[in-house]
Length: 108
Image 1 (cartoon, rainbow, N blue to C red):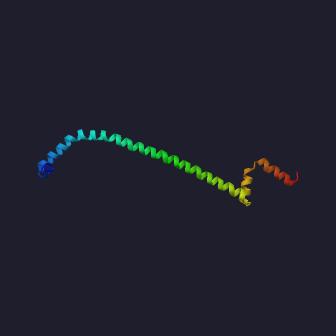
Image 2: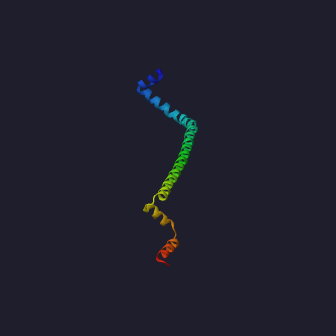
Image 3: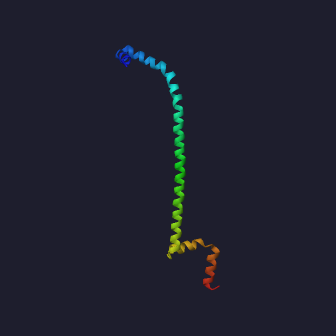
């Protein structure tokens, strides 16, 4: 540490320190990058696994919510005698069913 302090105290020392870093950087940085590559790949792999798990969980939650909504709609149409239930029943009938009911009502 004393060597570093001695080098930085003088202007010439700062230049030498800068040159030393400039010379060592091309050797150190690629080695450092090579050493970090497996770590970066592991982090990316973990991120992909979390994304896939979260995507699956959200899809399942969406399906469950859709099932609940369909169940509530079904219960409300079957338990209510209101216009909502009647409209839903009418919407479920085909054209021929409504025509037959209409003709029956007219007395044909």
